[in-house]
Image 1: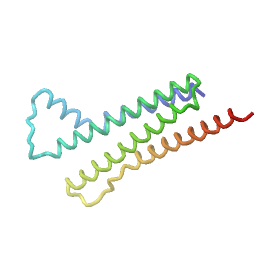
Image 2: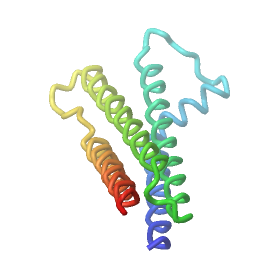
Image 3: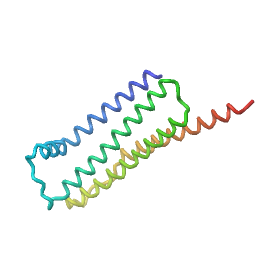
Image 4: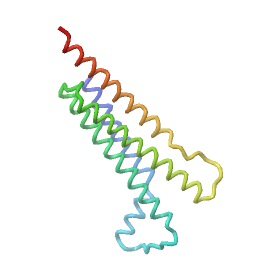
Length: 155
């Protein structure tokens, strides 16, 4: 089971990293050219600056969530399964994914407004499902931990 968990966690982190790079190539190139000094910032086009800022926030929450998933996997491999630290890390990961969901939805809504496109749904359903799943797993761990503590008190 631990080997399968390690494999799934590795595949999840690899796919998230590849998707972050693939989906954000234009922003990565814009930041690279800005760092080289080949782009002059025109503050009249403030949407590009806001877009890069929101992109950075989204990716920060994604990377931090990935780090917490790795930490949880390492602790489970060390046979520390039902522990309050794991439960807190699951909950914190869920909160970070919820922040990612809200930032992504706001970014999509502003993008739709900025482009003056009346069609399109700004809600990031993938992030909503991931947030719900991680928070649900965290609560399952909390219930299991409470049952374990209750069982230890039974004579």
